[in-house]
Length: 120
Length: 110
Figure (cartoon, rainbow over the protein chains, first blue to last red):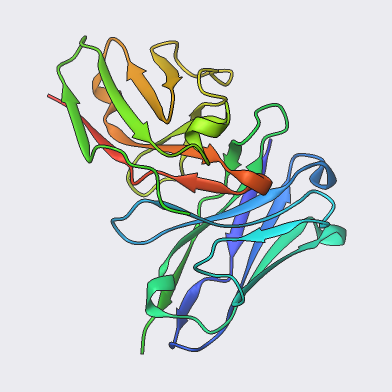
Protein backbone atom coordinates (compact mmCIF):
# COMPACT_ATOMS: atom_id res chain seq x y z
CA UNK A 1 0.00 0.00 0.00
CA UNK A 2 1.04 3.59 -0.55
CA UNK A 3 3.02 4.97 2.37
CA UNK A 4 4.69 8.27 3.02
CA UNK A 5 6.71 8.58 6.22
CA UNK A 6 8.21 11.89 7.31
CA UNK A 7 11.17 12.16 9.64
CA UNK A 8 13.69 14.70 10.83
CA UNK A 9 11.53 17.01 12.89
CA UNK A 10 12.60 18.36 16.23
CA UNK A 11 13.43 21.46 18.21
CA UNK A 12 15.81 23.99 16.67
CA UNK A 13 16.85 27.50 17.62
CA UNK A 14 15.90 30.51 15.49
CA UNK A 15 18.35 30.87 12.66
CA UNK A 16 19.13 27.18 12.72
CA UNK A 17 18.70 24.46 10.11
CA UNK A 18 16.83 21.19 9.87
CA UNK A 19 16.42 18.59 7.14
CA UNK A 20 13.18 16.71 6.79
CA UNK A 21 12.82 13.51 4.82
CA UNK A 22 9.82 11.83 3.27
CA UNK A 23 10.25 8.12 2.59
CA UNK A 24 7.91 6.75 -0.06
CA UNK A 25 6.85 3.16 -0.64
CA UNK A 26 4.10 1.17 -2.28
CA UNK A 27 4.12 3.04 -5.59
CA UNK A 28 6.42 3.94 -8.48
CA UNK A 29 8.18 6.89 -6.91
CA UNK A 30 9.59 8.24 -10.16
CA UNK A 31 6.10 8.88 -11.55
CA UNK A 32 4.92 11.30 -8.88
CA UNK A 33 5.52 14.84 -7.75
CA UNK A 34 5.72 15.37 -4.00
CA UNK A 35 4.44 18.37 -2.07
CA UNK A 36 5.26 19.64 1.39
CA UNK A 37 2.43 21.19 3.37
CA UNK A 38 2.67 22.49 6.92
CA UNK A 39 0.21 23.17 9.69
CA UNK A 40 1.03 25.37 12.65
CA UNK A 41 -0.56 24.29 15.95
CA UNK A 42 -4.27 25.02 15.84
CA UNK A 43 -4.00 26.60 12.40
CA UNK A 44 -4.86 25.72 8.83
CA UNK A 45 -2.87 24.07 6.07
CA UNK A 46 -0.16 26.06 4.33
CA UNK A 47 1.43 24.86 1.12
CA UNK A 48 5.23 24.97 1.30
CA UNK A 49 6.91 23.45 -1.74
CA UNK A 50 6.72 20.94 -4.57
CA UNK A 51 9.26 18.89 -6.50
CA UNK A 52 8.19 17.39 -9.81
CA UNK A 53 8.47 13.69 -10.59
CA UNK A 54 11.69 14.25 -12.53
CA UNK A 55 13.10 16.95 -10.22
CA UNK A 56 13.13 19.39 -13.14
CA UNK A 57 10.65 21.71 -11.48
CA UNK A 58 10.68 22.97 -7.93
CA UNK A 59 8.44 25.69 -6.55
CA UNK A 60 8.17 27.34 -3.16
CA UNK A 61 5.77 29.45 -1.16
CA UNK A 62 6.90 33.06 -0.84
CA UNK A 63 7.20 32.57 2.92
CA UNK A 64 10.01 30.02 2.52
CA UNK A 65 11.61 31.00 -0.78
CA UNK A 66 15.34 31.39 -0.46
CA UNK A 67 15.43 29.52 2.85
CA UNK A 68 14.01 26.08 2.02
CA UNK A 69 15.21 23.68 -0.66
CA UNK A 70 13.39 20.57 -1.83
CA UNK A 71 15.16 17.66 -3.51
CA UNK A 72 14.64 14.06 -4.51
CA UNK A 73 16.80 11.05 -3.65
CA UNK A 74 15.51 8.63 -6.25
CA UNK A 75 17.89 5.85 -5.29
CA UNK A 76 16.23 5.74 -1.87
CA UNK A 77 12.71 6.83 -2.84
CA UNK A 78 12.93 9.89 -0.63
CA UNK A 79 12.18 13.57 -0.86
CA UNK A 80 14.11 15.95 1.36
CA UNK A 81 13.27 19.43 2.59
CA UNK A 82 16.30 21.39 3.70
CA UNK A 83 15.19 24.23 5.95
CA UNK A 84 17.65 27.02 6.75
CA UNK A 85 17.38 30.32 8.63
CA UNK A 86 14.44 28.98 10.56
CA UNK A 87 12.04 31.35 12.25
CA UNK A 88 9.49 30.92 15.01
CA UNK A 89 6.73 31.12 12.41
CA UNK A 90 8.11 28.01 10.71
CA UNK A 91 7.02 25.94 13.71
CA UNK A 92 4.46 23.44 12.44
CA UNK A 93 3.70 19.86 11.59
CA UNK A 94 5.18 19.23 8.17
CA UNK A 95 3.41 16.79 5.88
CA UNK A 96 4.63 15.36 2.60
CA UNK A 97 1.90 14.46 0.15
CA UNK A 98 1.82 12.67 -3.19
CA UNK A 99 0.55 14.62 -6.14
CA UNK A 100 -2.28 12.67 -7.71
CA UNK A 101 -1.77 11.71 -11.34
CA UNK A 102 -5.42 11.23 -12.18
CA UNK A 103 -6.65 14.14 -10.07
CA UNK A 104 -5.14 17.42 -11.20
CA UNK A 105 -4.22 19.80 -8.42
CA UNK A 106 -4.87 17.33 -5.63
CA UNK A 107 -2.74 15.29 -3.27
CA UNK A 108 -4.09 11.78 -2.79
CA UNK A 109 -1.84 10.37 -0.07
CA UNK A 110 -0.34 12.14 2.91
CA UNK A 111 2.21 11.15 5.51
CA UNK A 112 1.50 11.36 9.22
CA UNK A 113 3.60 14.49 9.62
CA UNK A 114 6.69 15.49 11.56
CA UNK A 115 6.73 18.32 14.11
CA UNK A 116 9.20 21.17 13.80
CA UNK A 117 9.53 23.58 16.71
CA UNK A 118 11.66 26.69 16.33
CA UNK A 119 12.36 28.11 19.75
CA UNK A 120 15.22 29.38 21.86
CA UNK B 1 -0.39 33.55 -2.45
CA UNK B 2 -3.17 34.61 -0.10
CA UNK B 3 -5.10 31.83 1.59
CA UNK B 4 -8.55 30.94 0.34
CA UNK B 5 -11.41 32.12 2.55
CA UNK B 6 -13.52 29.58 4.38
CA UNK B 7 -16.06 30.08 7.18
CA UNK B 8 -14.56 29.16 10.53
CA UNK B 9 -17.40 26.85 11.45
CA UNK B 10 -20.56 25.23 10.16
CA UNK B 11 -22.96 23.10 12.16
CA UNK B 12 -25.97 20.95 11.53
CA UNK B 13 -28.12 18.23 13.02
CA UNK B 14 -27.85 14.58 12.03
CA UNK B 15 -29.55 13.93 8.72
CA UNK B 16 -29.40 17.55 7.59
CA UNK B 17 -27.36 18.91 4.70
CA UNK B 18 -24.72 21.54 5.23
CA UNK B 19 -22.70 23.56 2.74
CA UNK B 20 -19.44 25.37 3.25
CA UNK B 21 -17.82 27.86 0.93
CA UNK B 22 -14.30 28.47 -0.27
CA UNK B 23 -13.60 31.82 -1.89
CA UNK B 24 -10.52 32.64 -3.88
CA UNK B 25 -9.65 34.73 -6.87
CA UNK B 26 -9.43 34.39 -10.62
CA UNK B 27 -5.81 33.30 -10.11
CA UNK B 28 -6.79 30.16 -8.24
CA UNK B 29 -10.36 28.94 -7.64
CA UNK B 30 -11.89 30.97 -10.45
CA UNK B 31 -9.15 30.28 -12.94
CA UNK B 32 -9.05 26.49 -12.91
CA UNK B 33 -11.31 23.47 -12.53
CA UNK B 34 -8.87 22.13 -9.95
CA UNK B 35 -10.38 22.66 -6.53
CA UNK B 36 -9.97 19.90 -3.99
CA UNK B 37 -11.36 19.30 -0.53
CA UNK B 38 -9.74 17.53 2.41
CA UNK B 39 -11.16 16.14 5.63
CA UNK B 40 -8.97 16.22 8.72
CA UNK B 41 -9.57 14.72 12.14
CA UNK B 42 -7.63 16.01 15.17
CA UNK B 43 -4.06 14.77 15.17
CA UNK B 44 -4.45 13.08 11.79
CA UNK B 45 -3.30 13.82 8.28
CA UNK B 46 -5.70 15.38 5.77
CA UNK B 47 -7.65 13.01 3.54
CA UNK B 48 -8.69 13.87 -0.01
CA UNK B 49 -12.48 13.74 -0.41
CA UNK B 50 -13.14 15.85 -3.54
CA UNK B 51 -10.88 16.65 -6.49
CA UNK B 52 -11.35 18.67 -9.67
CA UNK B 53 -14.27 20.55 -8.09
CA UNK B 54 -16.76 17.71 -7.93
CA UNK B 55 -15.11 14.30 -8.27
CA UNK B 56 -14.90 11.82 -5.42
CA UNK B 57 -11.99 9.43 -4.97
CA UNK B 58 -12.86 5.78 -4.71
CA UNK B 59 -14.18 4.93 -1.28
CA UNK B 60 -15.42 8.40 -0.37
CA UNK B 61 -19.07 8.58 0.57
CA UNK B 62 -21.50 9.96 -2.01
CA UNK B 63 -22.83 12.20 0.76
CA UNK B 64 -19.93 14.51 -0.08
CA UNK B 65 -20.34 16.68 -3.15
CA UNK B 66 -18.59 19.70 -4.58
CA UNK B 67 -19.37 22.53 -6.94
CA UNK B 68 -17.99 25.86 -8.09
CA UNK B 69 -19.31 29.16 -9.33
CA UNK B 70 -16.89 31.88 -10.30
CA UNK B 71 -14.30 32.38 -7.59
CA UNK B 72 -16.22 30.39 -4.98
CA UNK B 73 -16.25 26.63 -4.51
CA UNK B 74 -18.58 24.78 -2.19
CA UNK B 75 -18.63 21.47 -0.35
CA UNK B 76 -21.95 19.94 0.65
CA UNK B 77 -22.38 17.13 3.13
CA UNK B 78 -25.76 15.46 2.80
CA UNK B 79 -27.33 13.30 5.48
CA UNK B 80 -24.94 14.65 8.08
CA UNK B 81 -23.59 12.02 10.46
CA UNK B 82 -21.70 12.23 13.74
CA UNK B 83 -18.63 10.77 12.02
CA UNK B 84 -18.50 13.81 9.71
CA UNK B 85 -17.43 16.04 12.58
CA UNK B 86 -13.99 17.20 11.47
CA UNK B 87 -12.10 20.08 9.88
CA UNK B 88 -12.50 20.59 6.15
CA UNK B 89 -10.00 22.37 3.95
CA UNK B 90 -10.30 23.48 0.37
CA UNK B 91 -7.28 23.69 -1.86
CA UNK B 92 -6.72 25.05 -5.32
CA UNK B 93 -4.23 24.57 -8.07
CA UNK B 94 -2.53 27.82 -8.97
CA UNK B 95 -0.16 28.69 -11.74
CA UNK B 96 2.96 26.52 -12.21
CA UNK B 97 1.45 23.69 -10.18
CA UNK B 98 1.62 25.35 -6.80
CA UNK B 99 -1.20 25.15 -4.28
CA UNK B 100 -3.14 27.40 -1.99
CA UNK B 101 -5.35 26.23 0.87
CA UNK B 102 -8.19 27.72 2.83
CA UNK B 103 -8.10 28.38 6.53
CA UNK B 104 -10.40 25.46 7.23
CA UNK B 105 -13.99 24.98 8.39
CA UNK B 106 -14.84 23.12 11.56
CA UNK B 107 -17.98 21.03 11.12
CA UNK B 108 -19.97 20.36 14.27
CA UNK B 109 -22.78 17.83 14.39
CA UNK B 110 -25.35 19.04 16.90
